Length: 317
Image 1: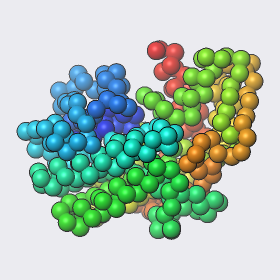
Image 2: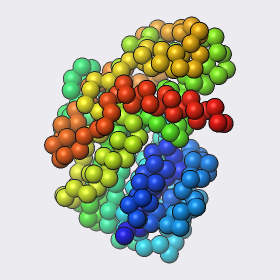
Image 3: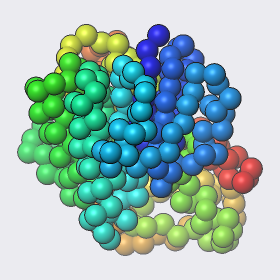
Image 4: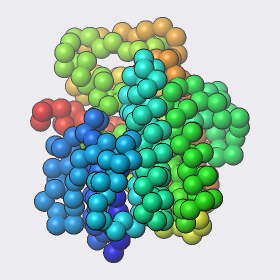
């Protein structure tokens, strides 16, 4: 079996991916600086004989190279990024370092060490705001409206150039909103935290009309592994459910009903929760469906499951 290195693997998606790769019999090494991920999230993995964790800053090529050390890595999964979009709005250097310079650093080390295969977690944020237009992989122009989306798009361009020069295979996964556990950020965790602090009142950013597609992390990991196994040297895929998503209002009501049924919900104004928020988009996954993959849950079912999972997670803390 292969040795897989997951950069940023102590985060939400990374630990689920690591578990799936271990189940398939691969060796897994996670490299993470723990600025977003946590040791506790990796706890179920650390007793596995084929799992190793090494703490290092993935945006520093020398530190990342030292973390790779003696390993003979077959494939790298680049999950390292800033997951706090408002933080990137407040300080552009957050996304520059955590989202783009991690890409530059990882590619630098891959070139030095002749590591041939890269899988990259990109985002629907690279597209920008296309309103009600159906977003497919060839739509344009690409005009991200957040620093996060801009740095993901810059990373995609850097990876494409690296593939032309020295990578033998590169896969780019354009994520939707991904939900599940261990949750570290996102709308559900935000609502659950607010209701823990003020059980009688839930404050919502925006008017609740924001509508987006949501995919459970279990389906996301299945999709990434499916794409990895496809033929071809350079692949770009939207990953998501096959529906138009659900509204923030519906999510708020689900969390309220499940956690604090008597709470009043108070909505803000306008259809954007923060600067750089895309209030509504329709995501095409026809390219991926055409390869034989399909999600097991739609946005609503994924959300209902994730709400229960995240509430249970927070009760245990």
